[in-house]
Image 1 (tube, rainbow, N blue to C red):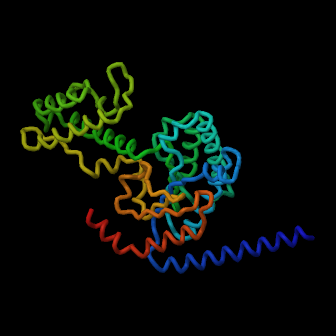
Image 2 (image 1 turned 90 degrees about the vertical axis):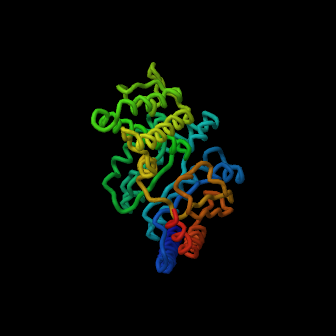
Image 3 (image 1 turned 180 degrees about the vertical axis):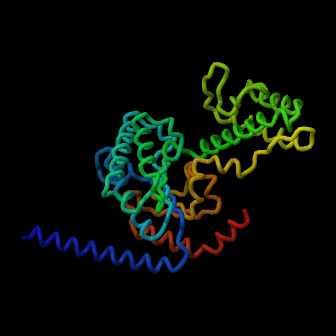
Length: 339
């Protein structure tokens, strides 16, 4: 009898809270609603330490908070939600901790694909953003499966940044842009580009330590040497790409014309090109650092830093962030037009 009464009371309170939340969101929707909110989920380990919990419990609590925040965002009408789940720098943590996080991530991905999950409830399309080749194969396979299964969903989008950093994303985008430029040069070499210009471009690459000739594919942009090994240092690759841009600009004034790498070329090759730039960036635990997250995409994006740790984040934090966004919306839109 007591159990039945407790269940009824719980259901009534849950329904009341849901109704109140929808009323609040209805009022907020009278103003501009953000299309894209990004989160830096900071404070899971501190949450566990603060409460003397076992290692890993904080991350599990953080996943529960993520599910709640996702529901709030989608109920409000936010289409895109991006979360910073695991940075490239996180690989420097203890191997045991990294392995535990990867297993937890794989487990939660499987949960998200269940019929009753929030992914199916709101028709969410999943994207895993970052250098996924750095991940263990079982985790990568789970992510690829999740992206394939949800590819048909169109209503909402969730982007999970894993093995991600902005510096890696920018280097990747420049390398891909150089590949495209080099392929265009190769394809048009016989018709519109003089041999002298090709030779000049080839010499520019060699000055940056990249051994290619006019008949080779763009090995400079993949970072491969003559033995097929991969150079993971982004600085030399970026430098070589800058050289290509300079030669392209110089070629405009000579007999041969080379295509120039434009801002749009770089942006379309970003990992985050599948979504518009965030309207709000929220980082929990009171930190105001971006920690190498979405540096390219957040030039006009307000940062909200509540003191709450990630597992402690709640509805009130999201409402306050949206209210601040609405208050400064006109100014932010004006700034965006200036870029």
